[in-house]
Image (cartoon, rainbow, N blue to C red):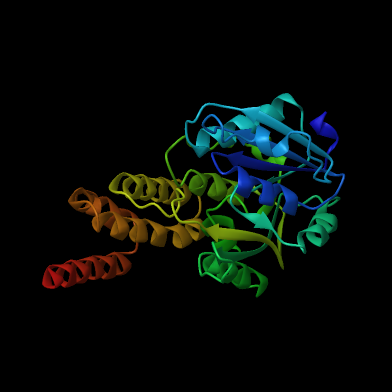
Length: 304
């Protein structure tokens, strides 16, 4: 029974078995940890070929198969499975193409018997060759702001990725928190709701997790549709927070502007929602965003 474990690491997987093997092998070899792989791969690229007969050293491994309907759906299926198993420990989300550091064992040991609703830990950004990348720098900045004693809003509301934290499963169950089943940015409002409902939080800069920028991954693939979905995810999150807390709204409104600017680069329809952006966000910041978009368009036209 999964209810006996103190940690459950949830790993959605699709068509990257070699990277999944690396991820699983990096998970701390602690008996208090179980791993739930939710596989939605095409035939011949599934998790079974990685996990069958393998002993990874942690306490338990479960693989469940689901149809490919997006990572929001996959993560919700993991939450449903854990509810049915009456799981009561901490959740740790990971992506199959990322991995944990050797220091992760120390951090898992440190917090296994604590009662925090949320614990953020250090995340490093890397490219596919292992070189340093800036893709996790904003998380480092948010953690620095919190640890300096100035503000916890950056961590609670502006660290959208669901990985990079220990989550008490009761926080999810008691507040009925689910992922929106959309194509991308499904964890934006999920993470903001965790931050809003959490009563006890802390953070530790110990580097535990490596976020990899992988060519061809969903995160690195930019399309007009993805940009549009990302914008509405940021918009809905900011509106949800604005109805509840000025602090959370302050941190996430800039995500709305950034996503709107990104959408504008690929689709002229983005201009139609500019009035909504003005009503929701800081007017001065929106004007700066508009000027930046127009400058980019002029520069692109001149190049042609």
